[in-house]
Length: 164
Image 1 (spheres, rainbow, N blue to C red):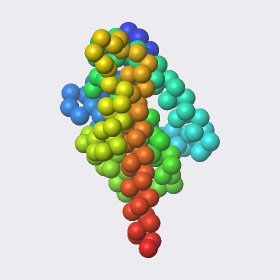
Image 2 (image 1 turned 90 degrees about the vertical axis):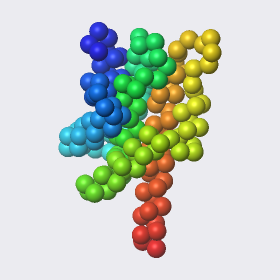
Image 3 (image 1 turned 45 degrees about the horizontal axis):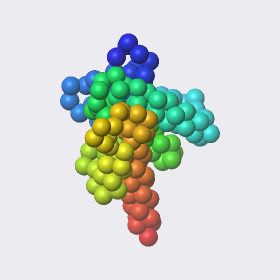
Image 4 (image 1 turned 120 degrees about the vertical axis):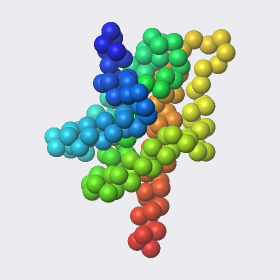
């Protein structure tokens, strides 16, 4: 992991090396990181951090996938981190229980990959004879961003129905 800075980032500072459920561990790392950093970052700063993390993520996920020789390695969790930061940023201010609900929903969409998340996951898959490149790096992030949007839509529908 320490041989290249892209690996450090893509593997979520080591959280992606968890022996079980690395995506869940990476999402937990994202949640803790958000809670800690939110003390110093306002909404605009979070927007910049997330935009920068996406751009860096394309590079880091692409290079790490190339280094590992696998188009979408399970140890890469930067996609979960950035996508869950997006969920928490748009959900803020939200208490612990709302954040927990968002965590559970996000993990459901990311792990089960229903409908649009499955489509997004397949959209940038490696084709036979194709080298691992930026399309796969973007694809690693893309399905988690769609899972984040699905999470936010479910929360919005839930809130609207609750108020109705």
